Image 1 (tube, chains in turn green, blue, orange):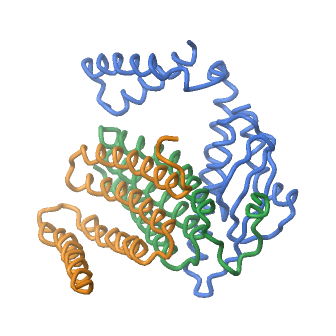
Image 2 (cartoon, rainbow over the protein chains, first blue to last red):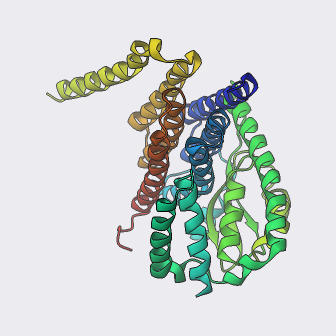
Image 3 (cartoon, each protein chain N blue to C red):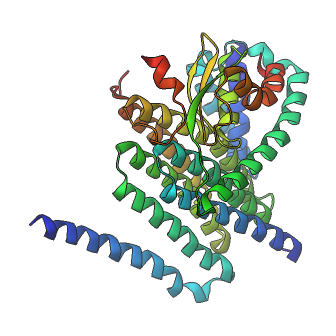
Length: 111
Length: 164
Length: 119
């Protein structure tokens, strides 16, 4: 393994770890379910995809690398669908928006 | 029948990637398994399998992926800055937008793209009227046309060429 | 009696988290790459934040979101684990875990909507 490959993989892994931490801080700090879902879906998904890409760069086109790319594509396809289902379920189960929210057109149209 | 063939090819490619160093025995097992799966569930896979034969759709898809990844990166930096800001500058709300896409695959990809781009999260889809309900972390306008202009229109033109 | 039960639960949780966090230190010397071993601590911090949200979340939806996030983080954990050890079946675990976490999130969403599992 040459050093350029090693450095590029490590940079991708560090960026991914950073985005994971930001997403989890958002999970703690933001006020209601929908905002938390925004932070975790975006940051944690792209952070984990970046870690998998770093694994691919470190390992090259072997068994591990191809599986990492496959896992990244799968995650990029399924994670927004899960977030969409959770947001819809939360709204239907009666979770209110944050009191300082601006508008809720969905609530108006359902009644 | 054509749908079954497409599912067989996709399943075989995924199997070959999962058992990557190409090996004769693995390929034979993959052939049998993907043929079985395609035979059982092939009719559920796609309503319009002839779309898989059009070359222009793949070219537009290759144009769509880098744009989507760039928007995704911008979304991440945006959310990270909002979370790290001590004053927490958020202004959330649920708005309505219109879309002209009708096919199920197109709507799914539009919802996925909206979820992974800056500040928006798709909450529900009304497929008959073509209305999406979107949770926006920083509501700039509540008007339906302006919101459509801001959120949906960058993706809709390309997705229409890929999936419709 | 109730306090005792809570105390026992927290004790077991704290002991398991401490064990998992101290385990990389013990085997740090045998690994080649130093940074990757330290990166487990960062991911452990993320896991702890998710577990806090699972414990403190005011509504069931918050807990479902935290569990979904935990599933995605574990995929990244398995990917990092496969680099210094050099074993490729960690990625198999990662793919299977991503699939199972996705289906689990869909089932939780269906439960939140108030529908049965057989609809």
